[in-house]
Length: 204
Figure 1 (cartoon, rainbow, N blue to C red):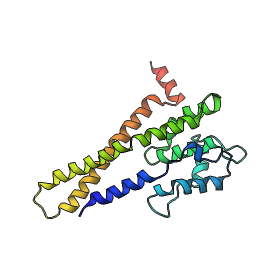
Figure 2 (figure 1 turned 90 degrees about the vertical axis):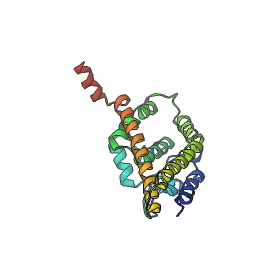
Figure 3 (figure 1 turned 180 degrees about the vertical axis):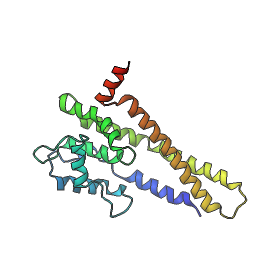
Figure 4 (figure 1 turned 135 degrees about the horizontal axis):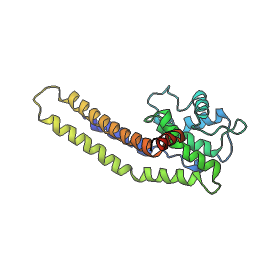
């Protein structure tokens, strides 16, 4: 069974997914229903199951309550809100709510306090980096499949197919866990809450 063909199909789907650039976001403030509809229309291909939700009203309200997202302005969400929600959507698959709050706190502060800061420029720059790195990502996945195949090929067993698939998933999971660990450590070290910084200062 050739699992690599199915993996390549998944990667092709990812590659052909349209990136939501700032120019694609309506340049007007949107009500909650418009926000959730926009997210479903533009990020729906990233869902694991058809019935999954990209973002719900409850999720968005909770993000505001937890200071992960600036509160809406007269019940409307600006383009900056939309870009922040897209960040949150991707982060929440890997990071805890607490970590996302720490990570986005400086960005929210910049939006609220620095008139010269352009979130759309920053946001689009990150999308361009992501797009440029996709070829390296594909090569990395190919190498992972190749390594798993080579390790299983020498085994004397009739169950090579399932063991090969297990090995690919195992390697992908270990890599994802290692990357998650690095991201968490960076957040712990460089995105500390004011209360955490105060505690460290008192100890020193």
